[in-house]
Length: 158
Image 1 (cartoon, rainbow, N blue to C red):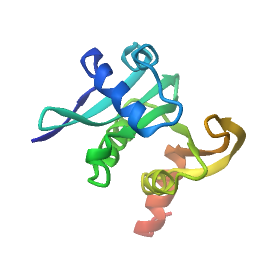
Image 2: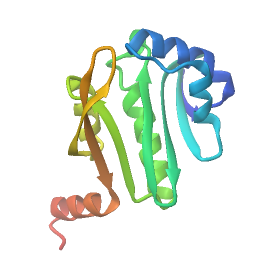
Image 3: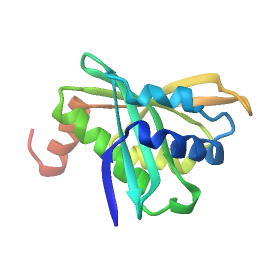
């Protein structure tokens, strides 16, 4: 069984394990605690009782910064990261967050493709943003205004 639920303290240990498997500069359990704070919202995708993927953001007023999206290697390419990212986007749309932004390694083509499919566009770069190895971050944003315009183009409404 697969379900999307709110990320909580009970997911931190598994999330830290996923971080260690997926990233060269992983977040610690203490760092992942940020996803459970009041100013954060995060979702977990549970598959057969295991944490398959998670995504989280920090929001201030009408802006959200997506700070984590990851899926366990055993569950990659099965739509779980897309599901938790979608849950974040839906949350933002329903709670007055009009701009979402994130950074992604410029070499991470699968993640960039995922973000594009969710309506994000490239807004710039941050040279030497990542460590281990040093790499440029691609900055991507998704605005409610941009999504509304895209939807109007698709339906032919102006």
